[in-house]
Length: 588
Image (tube, one colour):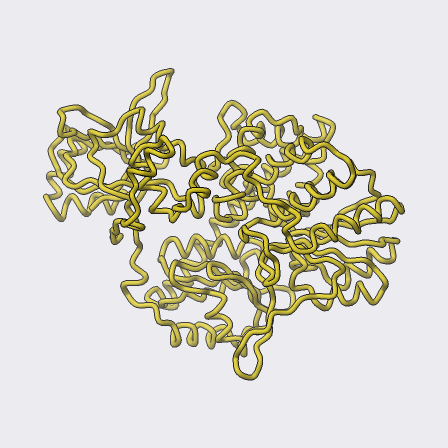
């Protein structure tokens, strides 16, 4: 059972005044306050996420310096190598930098580390390889901020190194436990999270940082501003898939990027959309995060991430179609081995009687190294506790963790660093390596030191406000669309209502995993609800409050049961017909 909470933030701010000043409904005003969007400039930018609301890229530390260096290297015909990451953000960042530098006339190539052989980020082996190939300048993207030794090695060879990244700044702890942030010897480091960077917005993804650099470079090269805006559809994909907060600039990128994506001229994206079977649908945040993104990601997990870049660069439809099918097939393969990994992880938890641990450490040596993070995420969703999944790599144990609200995984691992090899991450996710003999020691210590309580690990659902079902209308849904697109930092609004009368229920779907309910509203009008959650939980609630006989009647000839529901309003379009409905998030 989930615990319900009602958000009631910024209650002292006059939402009616905001409604009047910005010509938005009072409900939308309250929703903005619940999301801590209270400054009038921020509200204006949120409601109207237009290009003029993008911040000045010159405020990014070293961005102008990096653009000047790149311009000079292009003019001197120096060989440039872009080194990216193997995830979606890395692939998109490479595409943005590579295609833009080509447009500027650069002699440029790109390299992506192999997930298994090389691991994450630039390293001395890659630098050695590209140096011997005559490369003068390296530009990292979506990595490099922590590559202190690798950058030092490149500088010793006489190379120019530019780092573009968005990850947390590395640090060392002194004798007093105080952190001293460190930086490399790179010629320019662009990362909004640097302590001495005055850039207003700190939550750009790697592709967003690359975009800001190109914004400056294009201006210096005399390329029209409209050309840089064409890159926004790609930044939108990376922003959604890297799960950055969809506020401020990221909202500008995603809102406008989706418009461009739905009319994209990129052959690779067109074929990818076709391979996914969504060519006749309006592309939304959901499609980016759960269909298009995973297909691009699959190449970096099971093959080589360069296929994703090659797809985006394709200028031949037949080649693009072949690559898109390969990515589609790889993603299906990834999905199968992920499911197998989840099943093995669940068996491990049950066999070792650790299902009541506050922090799960799961060791499945045979699971593919590239999908441990996904498996950890699935297990975290099932048990609602921080989860680390470990597997046997070539010479050491490697793993990935996913956390819950209120548990800073990076900080907790930092308290166990004597048991670990390498580790890194942030509050909600981390990567690590360790020796096999330390697995059980890590599990025990993480659970011994945790301050998580039973209450902390109960799943929570946050309601924005109570909303009588009778107030649902097409106008309300149109009002709510002002807040779209939804994602991290801008969650979809969830409303609640007490004692809703359910007359009938039916189970739908090929896998019998969708519940449809027929509701009688207080005004005597019916509305349908759809529930994609735990149907067994719904049935238990009905049986506990009423009886199994009443549940049976609900599924057959109908009945009358009253439950509290958490929901959001929606429109169901089918066979050219449109009807109001609600998407049920939870019952109580």
